[in-house]
Length: 178
Image 1 (tube, helix red, strand yellow):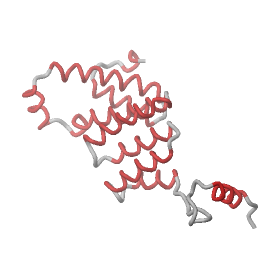
Image 2: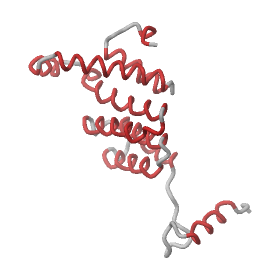
Image 3: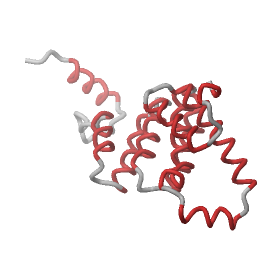
Image 4: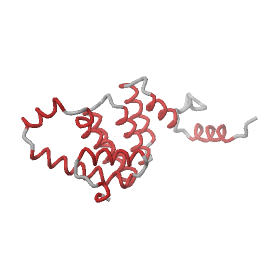
């Protein structure tokens, strides 16, 4: 698969990996992004601090964003190919959020990671964090609507988890309309 990419440039591998993830080719994205990470980690070890600082001033936006995009989409691909590793995948998205908290893609990817791991509450929390940072972001709002918002329990004076609330909620949800 790496031979198909015909490149060893970590920027190009990142771009190809992100494109693969966006097209839901998660295994391909995982391979490309892990190789991009491996190469860029090696380059960061080789470059001196002065060289990195000088390059950082004039580098295009994509090159500066690449590490956070790489980590965010790597986490998404990892969770979608191995759902049991959702917590590990979420840590990659969290690092990306720390690097670039104003990029909605990271919050969307984190929510998708938690969805893959079947942890709805954490997905909702990730989206709420993103909406707190970027309240008018359309992709975050759309995904939040897709995930859904819990309604008020039928008997609000009882805890949501009570058997009576659960049974009554199921009955009300499944009763015939009309």
